[in-house]
Image (cartoon, rainbow, N blue to C red; front, side):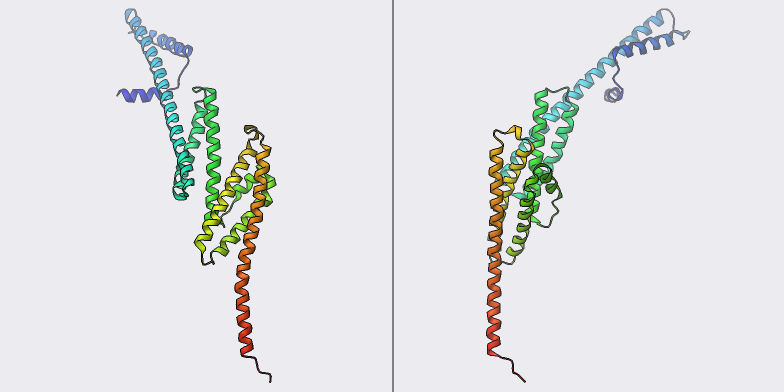
Length: 286
């Protein structure tokens, strides 16, 4: 019964004291018109009504404060759990456990959205520094996680649409557009050619490792471009990262040429065999 009453009080709107006073006076005036309530009985009713209004207001305040305390604690617990999952993601990347990375990331992203939404609603109940710190961390972790998921998707399925990454690059770093598109195109072509190689597993491992390093540099570049004021001498790492990505583009071009040369060798061998066969069995003139 008590729980049901608390639930009812929680649903009631919280009213200011002056409005409670008006309700009390109005109710008291209405009751005074009832003939049976007069004299001492009306006085007792007024006291009981006053005590009831006071207790309802006090209980509402208590339930509200308890609800806020629970929400703040839930927010703290979620932030703590999200931080643990973010550390797990870094560990999974180090050991190249991409399956568990994806599963954990899919659990983490909704928590980050909850942290953003709930901290905004509880902004008045938490300190300004705490609010800005957890929101900035949630934004940074979300950007890193989404980018990493897109990179893993790109490595596993080169035909996947990369509209989100394209938009991000166009908005934050348009100077990378041509380099990025060239690298992505080379990446797809190289994967197609590697599938035909005898040492496919070895070549795929080497190429995936190189692409992962490229995406690490791209991540860092986009992070700095998004908020350069958060870094000392931001121009220097940006220049270094840009040169590294340009060189990686050239390296992929060279890798592609080597793979094409390998295909050309097979073509040359086939051509020589056909020519030898033709010499051994020349066509007869009529």
